[in-house]
Length: 479
Ligand code: NDP
Image (tube, rainbow, N blue to C red):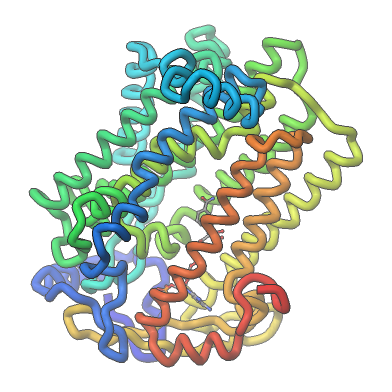
């Protein structure tokens, strides 16, 4: 797809046949391109390549062991220790962590495995066969511009209607998920490891875009952070978009709703806290699917490679830890007073409004080539150039007005307000119900730092100019 020096007028969703044909030609040419991707000042941009020591790799890849242990520890804490991490820790010290794991840890069963196979199979069929408009992502470091079929919203609706329908006709128990959580957690862990292993093998034996692979020199680190940027099965089945959206985000609301059903079955009514929390999380998940084409231009798709971090993360970490609040309330029904719930819910909605508004502004300026109004005034932006490894020069617009003139990541601030509200709605001081918000804080601060490094290498002086104009990362005067 052509991209003129003026910027991104050509970035409007490439749905016409002629644009897509041109895009395919470009992509074929890029297959012959070299390996590194150059910024305007000649540096490599994209994920860091070879150069880290074995110790750095070991530390960086430690979540391969620690994250699954954390996920099963959380499971045991919720199931056996009333959601008290301190009681879990005391028991682990007394009886030994591995003994606790053997006694109370998730147990893989045939039922859990079958449920997992059906779940992933259903999502794969919906992803592949549901119709949808075509959208394009960002230029990759090697110069590919990939197209994607956007059908996540339809898949979300069908999945949830199917669950409701099967429950209504008594074919499945609406509280199936919490009732079989042990075997599902085990199956999700297993699936995450299997898919991560297959991704590693695929990257070596049948890579989709060889020039966009990154090798760190450490197989462990490569397993963790991934080698391929956009692995695909055949032409259209994009493993990264599928994994992040379908077994990951799609499961989130289903787990919440099933916990609601479970709570109802147990006590005959649903606590307002659980209803409000589920509303906030449903808004967040639906936002993802309604704006699925926007997601193609975020860091997950444009920058992160496909390995354990994304694959296990979306097959297991997301469905098991992003849903802790729902799991907790399903097991231990509780509700704070209405005033507290109303205030926290309002803060959550405000956080979501900020999150959406910031993300919208960035997409609006990029999709319109800068010809849009931000807060009622013409958008102000810097034209930043960069090169892909085929030597072609491209340009991006860095928005400097609206929220993007307020701070460089106001969208993360909105997300954090929302995350803390989701946890606060539970109304508990148990640390376990706050883990999602703590995780998001660490994730987004870390993400902000690594994104800045990448943008600085990609755009050189133009990024420096943007940082001068907008010196604050999250909140002016604070950070
Ligand atoms: P952004 O959507 O902020 O994307 C960052 C990228 O945008 C940069 O790499 C750069 O990419 C481009 N960019 C940077 N500055 C500007 C600017 N001034 N104008 C225009 N483009 C700019 O971040 P993420 O992809 O991390 O997150 C997207 C959303 O998803 C966020 O709201 C975040 O909170 C949320 N999120 C949620 C997670 C969860 O687990 N719940 C996990 C991660 C994110 P380039 O120039 O190369 O296009």
